Length: 155
Image 1 (spheres, rainbow, N blue to C red):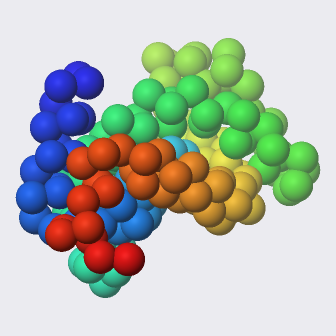
Image 2: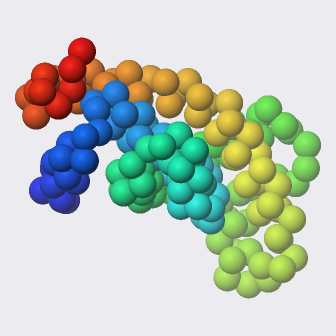
């Protein structure tokens, strides 16, 4: 995986992407990738990359690499959202698994409300996380010798 990531960065550099653009692209891809919904992050990344003129391949790779983090953060996002919006039915892991295995149609409202609560927490956390991730990646990508070539990226 590391070799593929390095290869992707090399290809992005050969296309003339700056460290700043690469940091922004990866940060947005990761932040959209942890959006607590199973659907839509790929399309959302396509749309955002199109309007911000970011590299589609890089944003999608960042999005897909963030998928395990998305799964791991669903419950914490839900819990934060449930504290912000305490109304509605409660969601538990036990109810989630039993609802998926047995009568999911009866529990669909619980799943929708849980997802909305998780999205609300993501909306609060995502902007700050995106800024911090962008700044960290910008520093990292500026220190990589491949990015420091003045002929490619004049200051």
